[in-house]
Structures are given as C-alpha cells and as structure tokens.
Image (tube, rainbow, N blue to C red; front, side, top):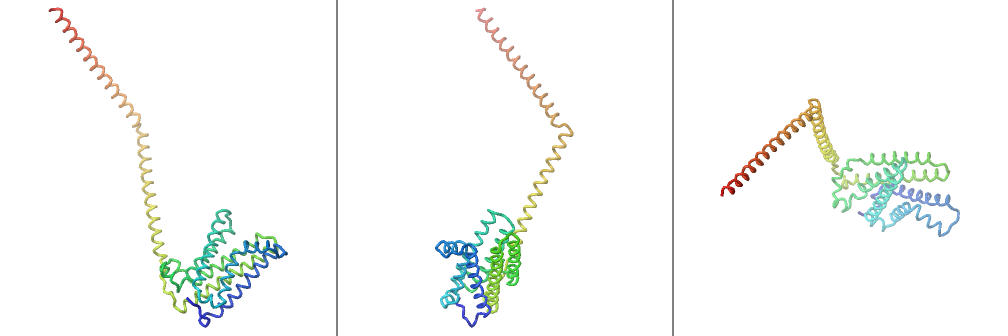
Length: 291
C-alpha cells in the first residue's frame, strides 16, 4: 500500500522525525561514552552495539523519500522481521540470564511484535494470506496495546535506573525510554489512520475459542487426575482390607496346606505305582521258574 502524504496524519511525520533524532542521539551518546576516538574500531562498535537502532533508522529514513512510500509494505515486512529477531534474542537472553530486566525486555519486544504484525500488515496481501482477520490478538485494542508499551517502558526504565550507577547508563536508559514511547506512538497513529480508512478494521478475534479449547484441555486433565486419584483410593482401601483381615497370611496358609496335600497324594500315587510294578516283576519271575 502506498502512503500518500495528504492522507497521512501530520503527527505521524513529526513522530518519525523525532524517532530519527532520538536514535541518532542514542548511537552518538553510547559511543561517545565508550570512546572519544573516531576510528574503524569505533565504527565496528557502533554496528555491533546499536545494530537494531541502525536498522530502524534506515526504515524511517527511507520513509522520508518517495521510494519508501511506494514500497511501504516491503519496508513494514523488513521492520517486523527486525523486531522478530529482537524478540528471539530477548528470549535467549532471558533463558541465559533470568531476571526482572530480561523479563521486561522480552515482554516489551513481544508486545511490539504483536502490535506491529496486527497494524503494519493491515491493507497488505499478508493479512489475507495468513488470515490475520481471525487472529485472537485482534481483540486487543489500539489503546490497550499502546498503554501496555507505556507501562512496560516505565518499568524497564525504573529497573535500568536502579541497576545502573554511571551517568552514561542513566542517559542511555532515558533515551531508550523516549524511543519506545515514540515508536509505540508511531504505531498507534498509523493504526488509528487505518481505522479511520476502515481498512481491515472489522476483525474477529477468537480469544473465546482459544479459551474454550484451553478449558477443555484443563477439564480433561482434571477428569484424568480424578480417575487416577479414584483408582489410588480404591487400591489403598483394598490394601487396608487385606492388611486388617490378614488375608495375605490366610492365603499363604491355605496355599501351604494345598501344597502339603498335593505332596501327600503324589507320594501315595508313587508308592502305589512302585508296589504295583514290584508285584508284576515278581509274577513274571514266578512264571519263568514254573517253566
């Protein structure tokens, strides 16, 4: 979708320029605190430390030119990919070093990726191809998502200010907070623009269906647990009954008696068979003697 200047809220352009200024300030300040020497090493440090900011900076720079407005959807796909990478790295960081700061970073990145996907893809073929009209996150309003960004950014700022003891850390934390606020506001304004143009605005979130499926799984799990618990109770009662009535000992006694009886019968049968065999041999010997 091509963004036309007359259709775009002027506040969006102001926010875009402010974001460019803040990103430039973050890059310059972070490197000026690290080193005062401009060299190839400094440039490499800028690339490594502020790679995400640089990519977002490129996105907003291109939006200032006609080529960026013409290929707006492709730039949005690029921006979503950047934040998808940020979310993925934040998950790995949280797993490696679990703490309040890493959890807040992941939560903020996750909110941004949800916000971006359900805003920037509206009006594009991706929205229809991936059937995002039925996404459960459509139930999250524009105001709710923006306030979530604000709250998480405030908590993240507070944690960063508490954990840092250097002036440079305070400055960078404040600039990061301002960037998150402006970036969230940019998404908010663009989504508001899409709502006014009624572009994919009639979406049906299916959180109720998701909740229903989860409840079915939970109910099934609860039933299974009850069955297991019932079987365990029955088993315990049977064991108690057997123990109280000394059934096991009685069974063993009966078993011994049966074994003794069977052994006695076996001995008698063998004795009879032996006696009968001896009688037959004696009879044959007598007959031979008579002859």
